[in-house]
Image (cartoon, rainbow, N blue to C red):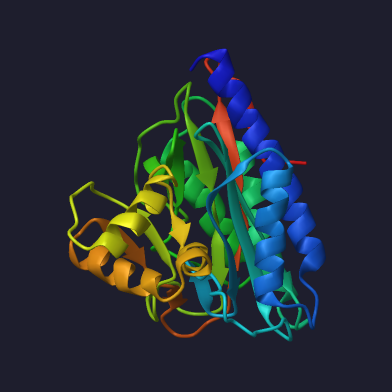
Length: 296
């Protein structure tokens, strides 16, 4: 990894951390989810980055892949709120998340995810087996009487690629593959008082370009050109409907059916358990130094 790319990762991580802190300050009872989302995305640009994916605000049993749409009237109330955001600088990505309990009922569940992240970071080094990270996460979450979400994981970060190898498990999955110099990745514990499994449920509002193909409809061609500007990173339906109105819904349907874009429906805990999340991004540079990119 050359020095310029390394510095872009460091900058993306710093912006991610600042945007997360800003976003946390907006999560208050009575505030609009939509306005909060858009203010955070605006802040990312102001700080000199671009969203690596749409800001996600997942509440209660929703674990991930939920983004508000432009007509959403919801406000914060008694929810458990997980804020997950990512920033890229010339493709180098910083990804982080934090959970706030507005209900006051799930303090241990919030602590379980946060402490699991702290314990996972302690074992990270060149040569650490992936299963060791998962064991640290699992054991910590279990010590709070909660369950890790077994079918969600941390993930590698590459240029313009938010989900790549290595997969960072939230349980000891037996994977003896080792961390190496030059790796960037996100460590992402999810804790729940439910069964520990999530599944897709609901209508998607997050999409990503997968393949380039010709399309016949002029409307869809116009919107596909806009999607290509997102550089193959995930995007929000809201970004398109705000610019193109109802035409965006038609285009997204056609592009999905053609296999040009992939949709990501919300991921919901199977037993409707409350889900909490914590996340940092890590870079192991070519000298073997472990840099927690998103730590303030």
